[in-house]
Image (cartoon, rainbow, N blue to C red; front, side):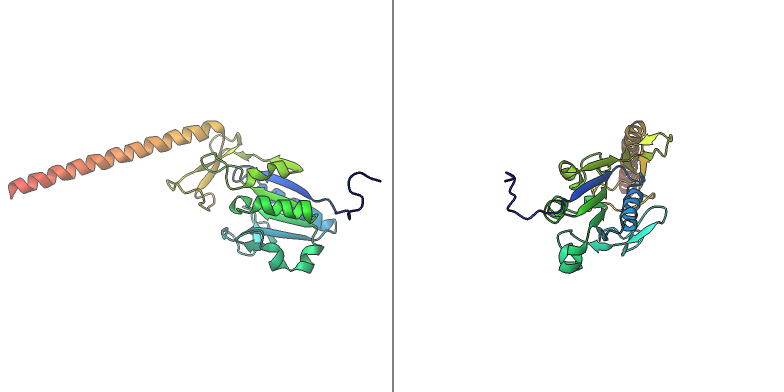
Length: 227
């Protein structure tokens, strides 16, 4: 008798594939390419994205160049099975997840879908935020993954490979959804140089502000003397 529990029913083995990289690296394009390939192979697929992302459409995953695929926009992943319906979920072969960094329950969902339900899960998301720190739970699922693909973009400053996402604004919250108006892909050199420029600009603006404040105080003092 097979020592690995031959008396138990055999489950279909699931898979987890992860696509990561900075913004504008083509992560969503790569995800859609894989999903469409699965569709062409006759497999039943469903796409999920975070309901937080309303940049291009609320009911579709959309790439920066306009390619789109219908999806479920959800605040969390664990509710997907219930919303889709038990029968429809059982018939699913492949689940695509875009902007995965926004899902706090990403790890638990991938475990359940791949390990227990036999689904192929293809995940696309940012591995790091604008500070180059881990973003959401994307890096947590690397140990679960069958494959990990790290994509690069093109540095907007010099054209070399870009590994990082640089934020153009002074907003400091981690979750700030935006496009080219807020972010740009950069290489290591221009990420570091960009931070230096940002800090120098902040220092200059603060200096100007203090100078204007001092001038205003002097004028107020002079005016009180004249009175």
